[in-house]
Structure formats: C-alpha cells, structure tokens
Length: 270
Image 1 (cartoon, helix red, strand yellow):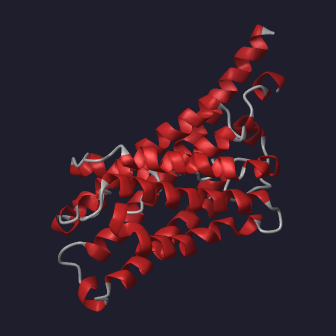
Image 2 (image 1 turned 45 degrees about the vertical axis):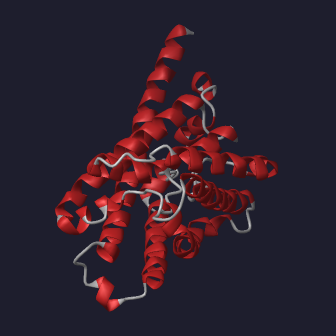
Image 3 (image 1 turned 120 degrees about the horizontal axis):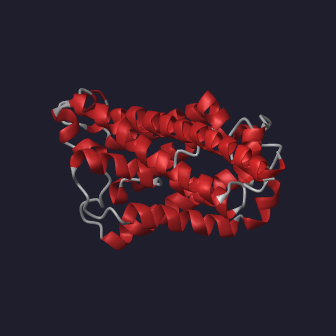
C-alpha cells in the first residue's frame, strides 16, 4: 500500500509540474501581449494618439484585443492542459467550487505570479514608451479615491467571474465561454479604466509592479479581484454542480491529469 501511495504521489508531482508550466506560459503570454498592446496604445511617443485621438475609442480597442489574447490562450494547448485560469481569482473560484484541490490551486497561483513576472521582463524593450506609463502598472486614477478604485475592481471582477460561471455552468453556451472576454473588456475598460486601471487579475497587476517598482496601492489589486470573485462564487453557487472541470474551454478533454485537477483523493485510487 505504501508503494502504491508513493507511486501515485510521484505521478501527482509530475502533473503539478505540467500544470505549473502551462499556467506560467499562459500568464506570461497574457501580460507580454496584453501590456505591450497597452504600451503601444497609450505610451508617450506612440503614433496611436495621433491615429486615434479619442481615448475612449483606444480603450475600447485595447479592451477587445486584450480580451482576445486571453480568449486565444483559453483555446490554445495551454488551455487544454491547465484550463488557462491565468488569474488567481479564477483559480480561487474553481477551488471554492471543489473543482481543483488546495495544493494544486496554490501551484496554479504561484505559476501565475511567476509567469506575470517573466512576461513583463521583455516590456523593458519598449524603453521610454513603456516607462512613460510605468509599464502599464495599475493604480487609482487621478481624482479617484482608494475606496472608489477598490469598488471598481470588485465590480468588474464580479461581473467577469459571474459570466464565466454562467457560461461554464450551462452546456448549451459552454463552448462560447472564451468569446465573452473580448466583448466584456471592450465594455469594461472604457467605463472603468480611469478609476482603477481595470485589472480584475492580481497577476496582471503583480508583473508591472515588479518591473516598475511601483507598489503604491498594490493591495487594492488583490483585495478587489479576490473579493469580487468571492461574491460572484456566492451569487453563482447554484451552478457549481453543473461545472464539470476546472477549464475555460476544452471541457471534454478528460484525462487522468484532469481527474487530479478535481480531487487529490483520486491519487491513491490510480
């Protein structure tokens, strides 16, 4: 029996590494691509200010393209392996719904933070254009209080996570889950970016903070998204049983690794 447990624990460690590198890669790609887009759209010296003078239009385009990057990651092999959470708030909800066990949830979050840091290092190549907006760091907007920025993060994350729960919870619309991100962020960013920066993701805020050294109000971008996700999980708790796997796409790609995503108890049974 002890040998069986040792073998299965070794298999579990193998799966943890697999999921770790998948989440790290996905989060790194999200931040590298998404924040490069933000820098190009809003950094000092960018031609986009002249090409598209209306800042709200640029925010709408940025939100749509940023969301499209996230959707593409969910559809990619990264999404097939780990589920493309690429956000500690999303992982927390899957854990609350008992779709991912605790040790693996911690592995996911560590991978997301590591990926955020790695993905932001190449942003240094943007030079002064990136430095002019501190590498797209998220801070409360001018004229807005910490409380208003915090509330903005709670509301936007609540909206995003609740939509995820609804789409994943109903089989008829489950396949369209990635499509919500471009549309949702195209709406949210013009409405809320000036208040808090519209993070909705602690990893998204963590990466630029490391590169820029700007840690002011960092707690807002942990407390706000996690609180919003928690409230969304409570609001959508009746759909928890309908969610079969901790993924945003590739729902039918069942494997022994996917089984381990849901319950560590299955380690001993294999």
